[in-house]
Figure 1: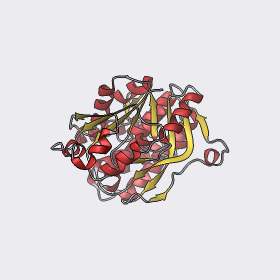
Figure 2 (figure 1 turned 90 degrees about the vertical axis):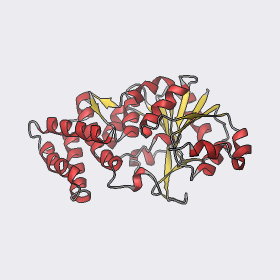
Figure 3 (figure 1 turned 90 degrees about the horizontal axis):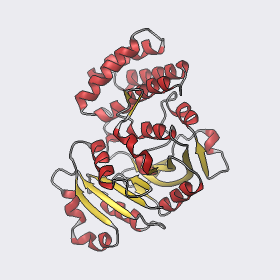
Figure 4 (figure 1 turned 30 degrees about the vertical axis):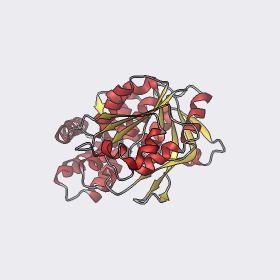
Length: 318
């Protein structure tokens, strides 16, 4: 199978680790597309510098100017540049790292069964790249003797959204079938946008087309802290990630993948999180007051949330 690596580039700080991860793969990527979203082309300049000349020459790498309209727009731009030119693609963020067997194991997963995408376990690492914790993987999966499992939409929806828990990870630890690329263009369930939780929403959407292959081995790490959105708790992306669970719950309910009780469990969980973490944030206080009403099943509260959610998305350009 032909696999293409798509890199939405912005930060140059971890470029050496990014290139090393690609060079040391036991199965090399067939094509690597970089979309440079850095303000003044710093990423492209660094890639073309003498320091990395030998590394770049050893990779099937092409560099394009990014749209500079936000990270998710860069994802979509990369998919357009790829243009369906192979069976599989992988969106690799510039501060995440993949271990040498990443592509070998993901290709094996796709060869074993007809799946929408493959997702591998990963570590969370600190700024220096040292693994510090794993993922909150459900016990039934974590304790399985199988290294690769096929997981359908019912299991994925019920083990993530009601508990407000993304145990699957991010795009960097996922390899996608070509036919699922269209899902990136419309991040919504039942006309409810899940922007803010683009990765988890995409995994759930893909599972509706075909099961997801889950690889138990931790084949890379997500870098927490530093300059990433995860380090900016009061920033719009972290706020959007919280509220995105509510959007996923409403969408999952409309699709029949969640019960009313499961959706209300999510509303309570996010309501509590907002009250504890964002009590002083003016733009979140209305949501914190609204979610308990949604959890109680109050008529009209869902419509209020959807209106406020749309305003939040528009305000922050999601």
